[in-house]
Length: 267
Image (cartoon, rainbow, N blue to C red):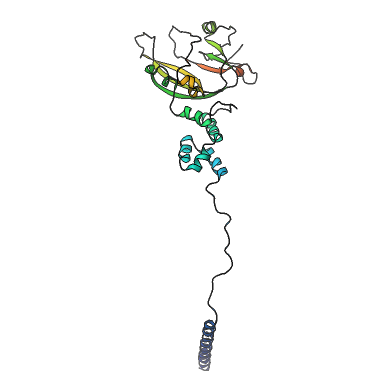
């Protein structure tokens, strides 16, 4: 009983002391000044992202295809000035065609790229009435000015020694073609109307391996018709065959010891 009374008295005294402490704290807070905002100068953010950073967008452009580059260049004048840099279109063209750098070209890379992807083909400029359809095969590069053309792909293929193209074609079904323009070449497969076939089972169509230099369509002489094709040789196979083959090789690599296919070609 005594313990309970002492505990009760202690609790009452504690409550009185606590209430007095709270009252003194309230009075002290009323006398003190309220909380004020910091008056020191604001910190300047030096890491603000700059959307118009030329080096950044030049790097990003390396990962975009031609269509995306055109869309980005049409955004505003600043993007157009960045995207139209020739180095960007050169990288895009070489990347998409998977060919080495030819070092020198006569036209801007943006025009060269456009001539490759805009759907143009040889029969747009010549003999449109003979053309039916076409497809892109790919691109390749010429480092030398001599090409080896062959209608066979077998171990018996030999590089001819004659200088006359017709003689080479008749003897080997292949020939050497000189004065080839070095650089990038585009290969297409053309489906055209057969001009000479009179066989009953013939569907009246003919497939053609079409190879052209990447700069051809941009030359004014080709566009206005002052340049024309010249037949340098022909070879006709009259017997029936299972299939037709056509191949174009850079002669430099056929004669090089490091790149020549010894099992396919011999001199």
